[in-house]
Image (cartoon, rainbow, N blue to C red; front, side):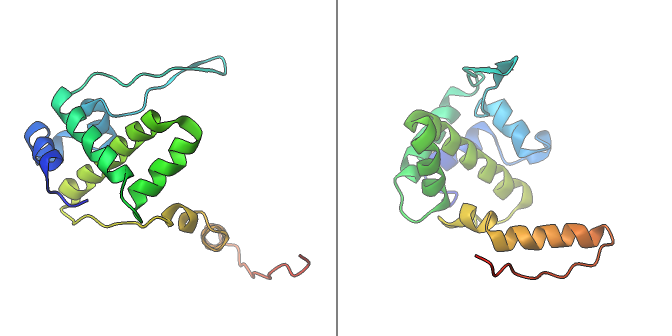
Length: 154
């Protein structure tokens, strides 16, 4: 997903290139009306509609999300498929739109090119090896010396 095509032109036209207005990507998503809604009370979750935003931006992001969902071997397609399995295709498109606008914020704010995470990014992020390294570094930050011994009983 490089910044090319009609969705990029619509994004630049509607949002602009000055990200000083939006301190975080969540602020941009909220302003655009792409952030997920939240309506829960007393442990009961009800429908959380997204807020109104730029009509043209939403249309462009929706088209980009449908295109990204149909690609093969990308993070956006894998994330879309994961959400589609448990929440349905339209909520998955909403989540893919959100992923795209968050990526747009990072690309423009940090002035970096788009970096494809790959379809296995979620599995790599939550892998047992990565979790082990994270927990070891947290314990070492607390001043505890750690020695890891793998469990061979299984």
